[in-house]
Length: 544
Image (cartoon, rainbow, N blue to C red; front, side, top):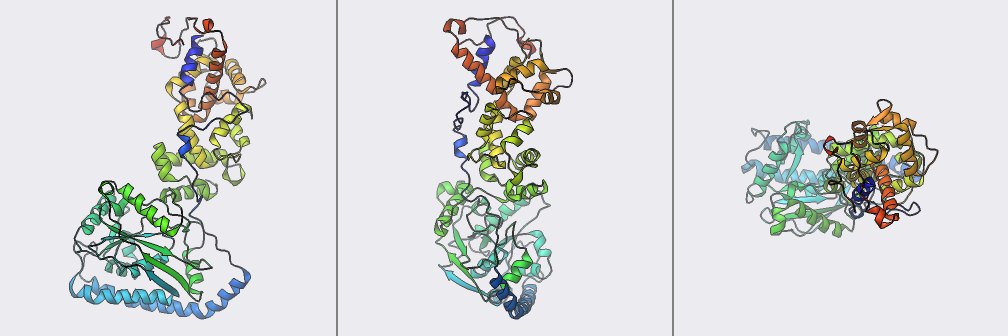
């Protein structure tokens, strides 16, 4: 009887407890309710469809325009390289002081002219709106949405400010020398202190009082399809100085510029764009945004505020996707899942569930093991039951419904991660595992036989003829299951935690259905799970 009281006390602490009615969907846990699906499921895909007439047009225009534009771009790049070589002559690769004097005064205006000429030769018709802030008004430009390598036009429109770039880029022939002339802030992938050094360099330049050129940053950190603004990285906002947001728009009927993780390649986009008569682009310089005292001390808040201001001006939503979602997309593809299966809104999931990238990547492997046989990379009730080695029953449907947040009859990877973190992992505590073991251990000998295991699962799942031999053999190393084996399996497979706690719910309902005098009757029960609890006494038992 005390085991039922223990079950009642423990089950009450489990998310989703008290959902014994199999005909009803379990109520959503409050913590779950904050995980609304993103307004844009996949901002990293772009599919530009070309009709027959459009293909014919591109072919004939390309015969004329493509070779001319390739020659012009090559000629301009050579001239720019020559000027950049003069500008950076005798300068160290990693600048410690800004380029000044005649080098800056002569070469910088010419490089700006060549930048405008290059985009004009590519067929871009640029419309600039707003006023460019001075270095004292706004030491940092933040540009969004970032959707293509053609976004460099914002750098030209802003007067060739410094940019943040990978160290490897300055080693590229021709382009690298031009990049060095912009006095970039370089980031190294091999230096473990690179992130800290980069932030310190941005702070040093942003607070130099106009000594250094302004810094232009794409805070999203990766390319999207411009359908939303993803998470802004805080690097540009750490100095706590005023920033000027720059909006980019490409108002064209045919999108030939968007360069995402799923879509056209670099070469294909160049050919498609250069074969168009012209390509429109709008560059809008918004009013300078000055951080509040709270935003100066919290760069994440400052970044979020600027993102919301820019999204409102663009009339698009914001999501919590980030570059880590792209890495998960690649991992999903390597696991033979659809690439979009890896999208989870990493910023929100990692912050609210306290998960790092490695933890979510591990869950992706588990998810792929279940969903690999399904179509579309989503888990249906049949795959869910097969993975758990259990039949489809009302209890299993309840558990499946807790994971299936949007009621579409399947579980995607995002729902799987949330379900494990919010529902299963909290139910997988040492205390609940101990109580669950005692409930399965009917004769209280410290071991669970296959008959005991089958009896409890049959009662829990409501399936009288349930065959659990396969699941039993996976847990047991011999003819019976010890507590350590039971615990080890439960910790490795948190999905079963809700199955175990379902039986606790059943025991709770049974206790409440008994007369009050029976509920209050004490009994002596020995606990053979934990050695320290072997005393035959009721003093340490909870009796409600």
